[in-house]
Structures are given as structure tokens and as C-alpha cells.
Amino acid sequence: MLKRLFSQYIADEARPMLALATPIILAEVGWMTMSIVDTMMVGRQSQSSIAIAAVSLGGILYNAVAIFGTGLMLGLDTVVSHSYGAGDLDDAHRSLVNGVYLSLGMTPIAMGLVWLFDWAMHSIGTDPAVLAQAVPYLRAVNWSTLPLLLYFVFRRYLQGIDLAKPVMFSLISANLINLVGNWALIYGHLGFHAMGTVGSGWSTCVARTYMAAFLMVYCLYYDLRYKMGLLSASRWPHFPRVWRLVTLGFPAATQLGLEVAVFAVTTALIARLGAVPLASHQIALNTISFTYMVPLGLGGAAAVRVGQAFGRRDPHAASRAGWTAMALGAIFMTCTALVFWLLPGFIVRIYTPDPVVLHGATKLLFVAAFFQLFDGQQAVITGALRGAGDTRTPMILSGAIYWLMGLPLGAYLCFARGWGAAGLWSGLSLSLILIGSVLVYVWQRKAHAFIAATAPASSSP
Image (cartoon, rainbow, N blue to C red):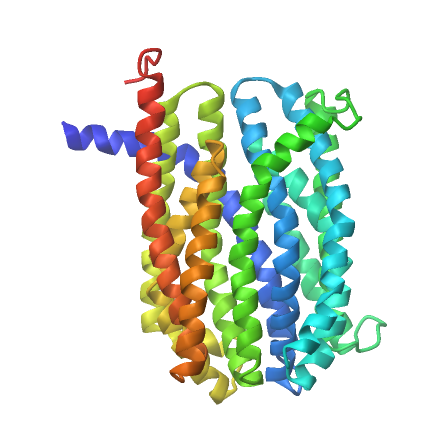
């Protein structure tokens, strides 16, 4: 009897969770595929390791700033899903409008910070050959900041009202644009002159502009067709609502920023070891980032499902959504860990035939296999907590564990013990294991607290 009830409990939530999560996961995979395509395309140039290293360094430094900006938009997950769950579409529309104003205000700040990286890359002793390609690439990608922020605003709004398929389509089609753009601009086709590695940066900029425009047009089309009331929403900024988005989004942005920044610092430290270790790091990082998109998509779906359950005041549904997403993420990441252990060489050969880079990247994937399960859990639980309005707990854990333990330990193993890039990855691996474990405990406590707090008023079984 208990087994049947448990199976029914999971099955009832798994179906709608997967229906929402599948297009979000495909969108996340499409997002990551852009970076992978960039790496593959520049990696076919004559100096493969230098080009890959330049894209790695420029990309991770840009993301350290851009992801903080896009993370501020994660507050829309909470407010839009709560409004939609409560049946208040007008409130969801007002959040979208004010999210646009927030992105406009963040753009000059983010772009200004990225321009400062020219000086930073020179000051840390980066390989001059890598630097010569990384700086122009970074400057080109920087012009995609406003489209990137607007894309995230429209995306979070659409996901919050259960419209994830347009997000998926925008990423898939943008990948085709990026692929053609890389081919044309890096190597000189379709009437363009060969720009080399910087051409990949401009291709990414064009693709991101397309994504933002597509989602904006879709929001307008959907409103005109189904009379949702978006066009009648107030177009004036409402600063208390903007501040609400900031207070929700800032901890989430800080958590993402701390996580990306720790990998940015790791990339910068590995850059001191030379182009080959940096290229190996980039390949392994792209690979784990690709697999991470699945639990990240599940986390996005969990944020929406948990948030909508809170909007309609159903704590049992909120708890069930979080645990179901967590179980699905654990199954997938366990499978990827096995693949990293058994087939690392096959994965690396997709990127480069260089035997030296192949050896280095294979070692890093072996280390990555140990933290796959825990990395997936922290991604899913962070989304579930965001749906419940808690964005601070993941931020505190990331700041404390990554920066006070993982990075110092990794640097010690890399330079003092002579482990090289694998030493830095080992320190970060331990951090992810601890963060994932603690967040499982946090969600368990939160889920019980949700139900206990509403027990007298709840009629759920």
C-alpha cells in the first residue's frame, strides 16, 4: 500500500514536471551548445590550443560579470510563478515590464566591468599568444550584454506562465545562426573576410540579439492572440517592484556570480600553467557544463512548480515538486558520472585530436565524475528554494565553501603539491560535494516547515 502511494505520489508530479522541464532542459542544452560550438570551431584553426585557450579565458571572464546580471532576473521566477499560481496575470505582466527596466539599468554597469578585464588579463601574467586573441574576443562578446539581459527577462516571464517551448525554439534556432556565423566569420565565407577567433565573439553577439528579439516578439504575439492583457499593463517603472526583483535576484545573482567567478579564477590560475593545460581545462569545463544543463533545467522547472504551488497556497504540492525534481536530477547525473569514468577519451576527441590536450582533459573528467551527483543536486535544490522565495541560503553556502575552502585547497594542490590543473579541480570537487549535501538537508527542513506552517488550514492529504 505504501509502495503504491509513493509511486503515485512521484508519478503525479513527475509528468507535469517533465512536461515543463523538457523544453527548459533543451533550452539550457542549446545555451551551452553555443559555447561548445564556439570552442570546436575555433579549435579547428592552425594553433588549436591557443585559440581554445583564448575563448576559454575570454568566455569565463565575461560570464563572471554577465551571469551576475542575468542572475538578477531570477527574481522573476519567484514573483511571476507566484502571480500565475494565484491567477493574477496583471501582476505577472507588471513584473515583466519592470524586469525590462532592470535590465536596461544593469547593462552599462556590466559592460563597464567587462572592459576592465583588459587590464586584469595583462596583470596576471597570461600567455601573450593567448592574450592576443582573448582580448578582441572579449570586446566583441561584450556588445551582446543588453540582448542577453533582455532575453533572460522574457525567458523567465514565459517560463513562469508555463510557456517554455518558445524558449526552447529560440535557443535551437539561435544555435544554427551561431554555427553559420562562426563558419562565415572565423574562416571567411559568405562574403566576409576571415576574422579568426574574434569572429566567434561577433557570431555569439548576433545570435544573442536574435534570441532576445524572438522572445519579445513571441510575448507580443501571444498577448494579441489570447488577450492576456500584457499590452494594457502599465509601461512606467514601478520602483518598489524593481526593488523587490533586486532583493530576490541579488542573492541568486551573487550565488551564480560566486560560482562562475571561482571557475574564472581557476581558469586564470590554470592560464599560468600554459596553453595546453588551459585548453584541457576548457574542454573538461565545457563537458561538465553541458551535463549540468539538465539539472539546471530541472531546477528552473522546480522553481516554477514550487512557486506556482506557493501562489495557490499548497505546501504539499511544493514539497512534492522539489523532491521529484531532485530524484530526476540524481538519476541523470549518476549516469553522466559513469560515462566520465568509462569514456573520457571519446568525449575529448570530439573537441581536438591533440594527444597532449587529450591526456590532460581526460584526467580532469575523471575528477569531475566524483562531483556530478552533488553538482546536480545543488542545481535542482537551488531552483526549488528560489520558487519558495529563498535565494539567500545557496548564496551563503557558495560563498563560504567555494572561496574559503575549495579554491585555497585547489591552489595548494595545484602549485605547492604539483598536481597541476587536476589539483584545482580536486579542490572544487570537494566544494561541490559539500554544497550539494548540505542543500539536501536544507530542503528537507524547508519542506517540513512549509507543511507544518499551514497544517491547520491545509486540506491536502
